[in-house]
Image 1 (tube, rainbow, N blue to C red):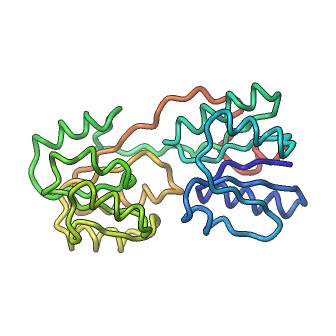
Image 2 (cartoon, rainbow, N blue to C red):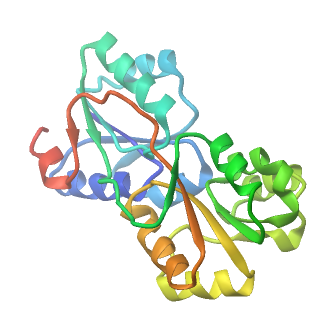
Length: 242
């Protein structure tokens, strides 16, 4: 059996390709939203936050022969645990990594604290597209924040706990086109966009280009540094390893 670490559109596409080839699949997610998007016939889905020990037990119990890590580029702990668990169990680990995008006239940062300190020196509304769990980090700037998060109860509750009012929370799916991005930036009078280097599949290109057309300053978090073995950037290459 093949275990796909999911929660991303990449994982779902890889699952479709492998199902078409007749492979038995286990796909794990950590959210109900991810589980909903991954629902398919002939695939076993687990919704659970897994630590390294959990992963080892899963590999053993389901007799996993190959682990395909298609988790989000910023899910560093998940990947590190999966690498360790695979090594401990002697299981093949394959990483699907979205190709990073490069932009001109964008401010890049290693940490959220660097972003926050930079934004303190600015004025104007800030749109956060960094995941609801990171919104509380920007508490000092809460009066200027509009948080764009997934349309699930947990995300909205995290924004409320961070002190944001209803008009500061924009709950919608993550991937939208450039025109929609531009309309949202105009509606909320955004001067600064904070996002993560999540790759093209996460809609980053459309967000950045829309912001730059409107003269909005873009602030991007660089990906965490993880030493991945067996990294692939396109579906055919990773499927060829199975």
